[in-house]
Image (cartoon, rainbow, N blue to C red):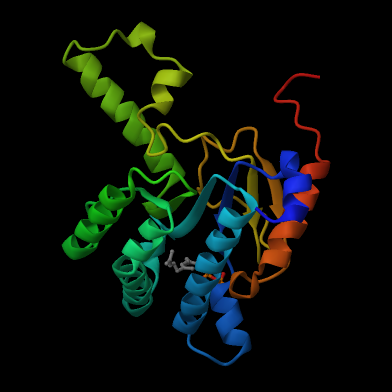
Length: 240
Ligand code: FPP
């Protein structure tokens, strides 16, 4: 952790969630294909994860591909999957840097080689104690809630669970994020002011910061600005 952040480490959020938005517009403004924006976005993602680790953030969760993103042209879907594939092929480097990698979302519709790469990256990094990087891939907040409800209903139908015992804690244990604390700060760049089906359950008490920069241009200085806004907020979690 840098000295500057160490001094004010009380205000560094433990968990930052990021909606990596604006890749397409970034490319369009430069007269480039949309995929060039995603490529630059993937670089920004790695840079920001490194910086988060440096300043003492414990968890970063980034929205890489939503359950709705399949509606995009096949060539764009393929390009995003290819970026993930190359990221995963390099994942052992992350593991060496003490990064724990996790994937959130429904993996079944993904290519089988990608699923295998995801599983091995998770397995190789599971004992790492540095930052945890969660990549939301084929992720949808509503689908995640339905998934948890379905698992609990199946357990109840098998007689393994009394429906009266279902409470928030138990429900959370069946979300993709089981065991991960809720985000403290959500950052959405690109000027859009919506959640787009991201972490609907987990963001209940999260502080939101919206920034005008497009994701491929997002730098550690933008993250510092978001953290400075977060540090000024008075979180009451429903109390007074
Ligand atoms: C949203 O911008 C971005 C996405 C749907 C894809 C995000 C994916 C990456 C940054 C690459 C992921 C790679 C790794 C290694 C995690 P948009 O395309 O909707 O932008 P626009 O609103 O300007 O069109």
